[in-house]
Image (cartoon, rainbow, N blue to C red; front, side, top):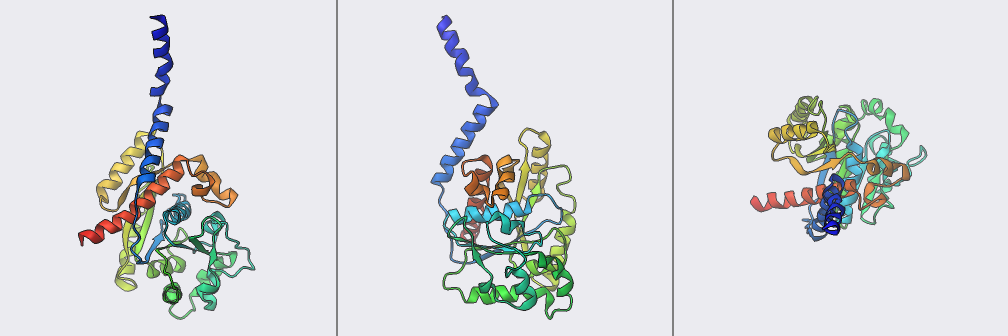
Length: 306
């Protein structure tokens, strides 16, 4: 009896929160291993945007891109943020003497002369940003067709490709200037990361208003297709309340996958990597892979329904 009690007490840790979390992560890894995705051959252009800073916009851009590449998609990231953080995370050089998206927008350099393959994956490419982009907002004011500079360059680049990209993701700054307007004009879809915190929906109505303005005057195709909850803390009731509120307002756009707060996700860029390669088995990497699978399959489901 004593031995039985000892065995029982020894097995109790299997029901601890940590044990349940590890078991859940293992189950999710197995589901991902069995998941199938189909790329249609059509290029989807998504701008990753949120005018509220610190919501994981760039982190979402590079990790979704890397996850899509590991699924077999050919992916291009356009770093339209003067900080160049997406370029850093993808391991692409972006010093001041490098050709960059600045030269495309201001000097009419073809994107083909600027695009670089990321060491992250053979299917992953990046158009880098440099510090020169910080002055591009002012320089664009005097340019002809200033709102369409990126779209014109991107259309020409896509027309010249033998094998088109499955996804083009545009990372833009957290403000509505001419850089972001160029991104909105060049895109079909907006991917909106929302931090699972009290002020999550703050400024969202303004962003949606700006998108409606772009729809009316510059790009009738643009729409918010995807909302991703980031920095999700499962230990707090607030995170779940925010998730419920976002899903109640945007039931068709909000992904089931959520991105947890993760040290690994935060560490990866300092090594010039995404979390997908830095720690592929971590909770953050698994969550971004789940989101990528869902983004691909949702579009396929919508096409089937149509």
